[in-house]
Structure formats: C-alpha cells, structure tokens
Length: 427
Ligand code: AMP
Ligand code: GLY
Image 1 (cartoon, rainbow, N blue to C red):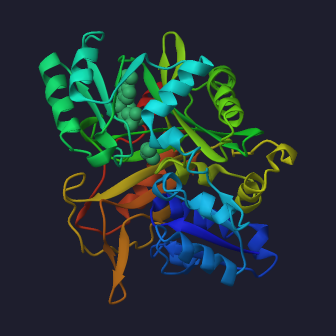
Image 2: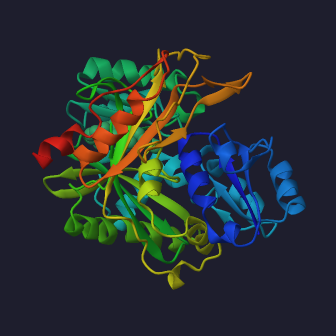
C-alpha cells in the first residue's frame, strides 16, 4: 500500500521521517508520496505537485497510485472538507471530516460544545456584530480575550488590557482584519495558569493518549515580543502529571469525542488540546484538528510505535484493537531557527549549510527550506527545527543547541532559552 502525506512544514518532515520507517513501507517496497513537501521531506518521500484545494485531483492521484492512506498534516484542507472527498471514494484518510474539523475551524462551535457537555473552559459570549460584541464586553473585566471565530493562521486572538483597546480590536476584527474568519467573534473570560498541550488519537469511538508538550509562542527570549507559530517545544510537559493527564482525558477529551459522535459527526484523527492549568484544574483553551508544529517534531522523536500502523488503524476505525501508544521516557526538545524578520516579513534566500549538525544524534527537520542550484536556502518564516533527545530537558537542550551551533545560516536566528521553565524546575 502506498501512502500520501499532505503538507510542507517541519511537522510534515517529522511525520515523513517516521512514516518512512513504518513496516507498511519497509516490508513491502511500497512508496511514500508527499505533496508539496520540502527538501527535508524529499529524503523520505517522492514529492508530487498536487494542490490540496483541488479535491478531484487529489482523489485521482490516490486512485492512480493505489494510495491506501492519506495523512493530512495542516488544518486548512481538513476545514475545507478534503477528508470527506477522499472518504466518499473509499480512500482511508487520517484527519477529521469538515464537520468534525469545526473543533478547530470555529471557536464558537467548540465553546458551545464545551458548554453542552460540561467541559471545563473559560466562560464566553459569541457575537455576530460589532454592536453585539461591544455590548457583551460589559459582562467581562480586563484583560479582555477576543477571538476571531474562524481560521486566522494562529493570529486571530487578541488579549486587550483595557476596554478602549478591546473596542478598537473588535472594530478591526469586524472591519475585516482576519477576513471572513472575523465575521463572528468569541469573547472569553481570561484564565491564568501555565499552558500545556495534550494530544490524543481517536477514530471517533476509541481514544489513545499520544503524549504532551509545551511550546514557546513568543519570538523573544523570556517569552517576550510578538506571537509566532512556536519558536520551540519539548515533550513531555512534566507539569501535566499523570493525575492531571487522567483528568484531561476524563473531563475534556472523552466528553468531546462522545459529543461529536452523538451529534452524528464523529471526530477522527488527532485531537490537539491547548490547556490552561488553572488553580481549579485543567481547562480547555482551544482544540486543533492536527498535530502541533513544532510539537509534532518532539512527539515523533519519542514515538516507539509504528506511526503508519497507528494512523492507518485510526483511518480504518480500528483504534480499539491497538495497544496504548508507547513514547520513550526521554525528553525531546526542538529549537526553531527562523528567518530574520519573522514573524513579520522573513528574509528569503539565505544560504544554509547543515554541516555536521546531526552527527551527535540530533535531527534537523526542514520547515521553510528550498534548494537553488544545489544549495539549501531559507524559504519561509520558520526554517529549521533542530531537535534532540536527552535524559533531562537540560541535556536535550544542550544537544539541540550544539546542533544549532554546527549549522551555518547567517540569515537565521533562534531563541537560546527553549525549555527554560523546565530547566529551572530541574534545578
Ligand atoms: P488560541 O489561539 O485560542 O490558542 O489562543 C492563543 C493564546 O492566547 C493561547 O495560547 C493563550 O496564551 C492565550 N489565550 C487564549 N484564550 C485565553 C483565555 N481565555 N485566557 C487567557 N489566555 C488565553
Ligand atoms: N505550535 C502551536 C500550533 O501548532 O498550533
């Protein structure tokens, strides 16, 4: 059976690296295809030019190449219904239907579901117009949490310190700052606590825990400056103790999976829960319908199981027959090397020489790279994910930065403090 992986970032390079080791491919001589991929993914897969927004073309490719599993990396094709188009033709796909992907695609949808199912999350109001939103602000106190309802590439959340700032941000959202994603807005109660991410695989009925991670969203050291897609991550998130993890499963993940199934729109794929660990216990901040980027990179470094078999079992509704996911006990940590200017306008085209970065066991996942005349170059905001493992966060961190220092890339920068919270806790 051949496998098709969709996407082109560091998350997809980590998935490709792990899928290429799957018995489904190594014991059969079958192939891994990736679209559009990147130069790192090309080391493990045959790259094909397929446009994921063109569902008929993806279906045709799958039929012609006997694709028995499609793995969808990013959220946009899922929210766009690509998984439905594939399933309608009997092609197994790892990733939720359009209806189920609303868990990421509509913040209001998820808040309503949480309210119905009694899932702990911040109190909220949905507003469909500027007037409604401004009136709703009355019921909240500063800081105000304002969210565009739809997909806004991770930029649709504003935390406003004053009422004036909140009114201004709402005007921008309803004025089209985030396009149609901002046609509706969710206003939320502000939660305090430490953030952590938890991942679970589900086929709509059975659920398997897939580990935890923490990331660093701000561009600057000490978690300062503008938000990014994530400047680094590590797994496991030790703040999410086994006791808290059990609570997250029981009170957040399982009721969500049940509610989606009861509504006739079972959720199949990976459920990525962004959590706030509050003094009242873990609360849901948001769901994503895909693996995190760069959280996926650290999870894949720790995964002992055959990823292909796991994702296929999920796609074929056989997760109930699969033993618990096995992750190595070690810590994995990844440092994002981004192009100068990120998260604004990143400098493109800078030369990259990976040198001996992987000599000590580190793994360099490509995110925004390209090749020009045989030379690896920067071609995006987040460019490389330099990933290492160790017996502690400190050890994984030292190994990851040793690998970073072996890379020559004058137009790239990184934070030097990824994992600082955990390193401090390790003492
Ligand atoms: P989201 O895109 O929903 O994950 O939000 C992005 C970031 O905004 C989160 O990672 C949190 O740091 C912050 N955030 C979102 N919702 C809340 C909330 N209700 N209270 C406090 N912080 C929040
Ligand atoms: N790193 C956060 C995300 O993938 O949404």
